[in-house]
Length: 388
Image (tube, rainbow, N blue to C red; front, top):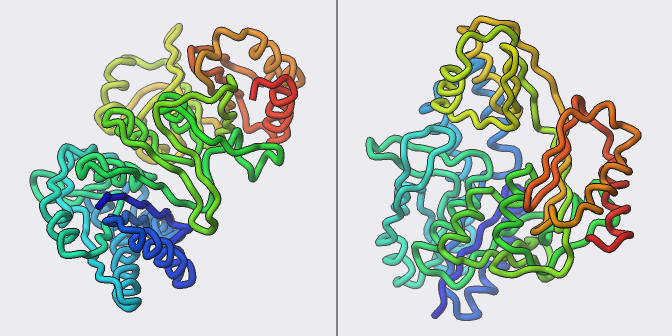
C-alpha cells in the first residue's frame, strides 16, 4: 500500500463547507488503497488575525509567545477535519507538530526542521487511520513550540513525505497549479504541466505565493515529487520534479512585498548585518558605498528591523518598491529576452534602480510600486515571441 501526503492550505479549510470538500477528496484517495497523511494550514485568515491581535498588544511581540499563539490556528483545522472524517465513518486522528515527532531548531518564527521521528505517524497508519498533522510547527530541544515561517505548512508536508518515504506529496490550494504569471493579474497566463525543482525554487524565492521556497529545496534534496493542484476541482496539477519544459521562461512574478532600506552615515555596516542575520531578517540586493548602506527586505520584517535600527546612528529611509522577475533555466543565454524586457519597460525606465541577470532569472527592481499593466505587457510580449 502506497503512502501519500496531502497538504491543504488555508482557503481549502476555511469553513465547514470547504472542510467537507477536503474530506471527500481525502476519502477518495483513501479508497484507492493509499495510506493518507494530511497536513493542514490554519483556516482562512486566522494567522493574519492572530498576528494583528498580538500587535495590538505589542509592536514587536515576544517571538516565543508568538509561535505558541500562531500554532493554535493549525490545531483548530486539524481537529475539525478529524472530527468530520470520523463522523463520515473513516478513522482519523489529529496530531500537533510535536506529537508527530517534528523537531526543529530554536529560531522562532522561521525555525528549520532538524529531524522527524515518524514512530507515532507509522503507528497510527498501521491502525488504518488517516493521520492529520498540523502544518507550520514543531518543537525544539527545550520543548518550546516553534513555527517554520509563513507558508511553512508546505515544508512540513514535504519533510514528512521524505521521512516516511511517501510516493507523492500533493499541495492543494485554490489554484490548480503553477502558472506563467499570477492568473488573477494576467488573463493570458497559462498553467505549466511540469517544472524543475530549480526553476520552482527561483519562482518561490522571488515572491510567488505558490509554494514555500524551503519545501522545494527539501523536495529536490530527497527527490520527492510535488504535485501542486486545486482542492476544488479535478484538473491535472503541475508536477515539480526532475523535469524541464520546452519553453525558456516558466513564470513572471511581480512582487510588491518589498522594502528598500537606505541608511546614511552608518558606522559599522558589518555589525548591523550580523544583527540582521541573528534576528532572521533575510536581506537582498545589498550595496555599501560612501557611508551609505542600501538593501531590501520583505515587508513583514519591518517592525523587527525598526527595533534594531532604533539603536543605530544614521538617517534611515524606508520605501515600498516592486520587483519583477522573469524565471527560466538558461535564461541568461538568450539576451533577446532581456532586450524585450527593456523595450517593454522603457516607459518607466527612470523608475528602474537595478537589473540583475543570472543563469535562471532576470530581475528588475523599481523605486516605487508599479502598475500591474506592465506585468501583463511583459507576459504578452514574451508569449508572442514564444519564449513562454
